[in-house]
Length: 447
Image (cartoon, rainbow, N blue to C red):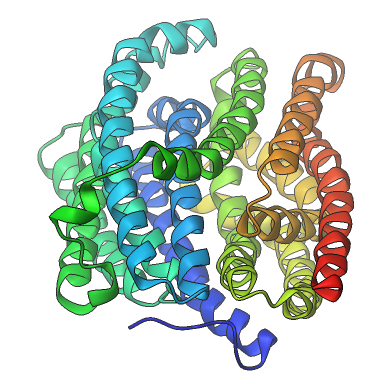
């Protein structure tokens, strides 16, 4: 079930790898979308705002998990490209141990700090109770999130992006059914949405690991592989921690933005929440093309094929930027109609603000497409420093939008904060990629 990306047409390999990621990421968005639609239409706008206002805080913690497990899988992918089977098994064993430690630590910290952090963000009084209930349930399920992300990232590191999709689709269906049962039938409110999401994550994670144990012998670890050395731990942490902190740094910018948004009231929070769900689906394909480049870059770097990396990046840019332009037009001209799916009839102010968000973001989707490609490729090459610097740039630009623009122009300022963050991050990433690839090409020629 493994797939080498070191041979064959780069564009075809990247596209075929990215397509399951695109579908899978869209279905993953359905986890939160199902919560949002059902909560917004059955409980009300305040409940919608309560779930929505937790997004940036959730991303602060879950983003760390996603970055950490992705970083661990980069080492595995590089060893797969180098055809080092014993190294792959050792990498997987180290990743399991480190992921377990991270799960315990993050769960304790996140659950304990959930309410204080929501208060620090000045979450509106009318929604803070529901927001606390929802986010604590999500944080209590961090282990389930780690389980799925570790297993799916490992499979993708070996070139299999389809299998995680199958489990994710099934889990999404379970999530939607549970949302309806727990919220509508058992009247559990926002707690039902949280339980449904975590149970679905757990189900997909367990399914992925069962598949690995049955169908992917290259990841079958034995007791000897868990004899972990400090050198192995350091190597994995050197890649995983920068990617994890990069995600959390980006999330801090989102938290600052959420703080400013909360000050505009529940209507603005609800509009931002609804628009963000549509925006997330529109941008997921761009993210998926980038994620494909992480595996593609890592495998070819392990195989020493630098020219092939350059060719793949160029072809991926053409595909992803082309797609971003199409999605930008869709959101600009049909965004408000899509936002109407998340709120009841008569919420004209929410829809008007959502239209503003989708128009401003849609214009700059091509910048985001480039950002993802450069960032993930650098990570695949094991170059975590500049993506972290770019994360700091995102933080600075998003904070500027939140603290200055929101005060000056209101809700539109919150929307501009995202696009400024994309531009601020894309510039150093582009420079870093071309400098890095030139250095690697020079070393390749000298060798």
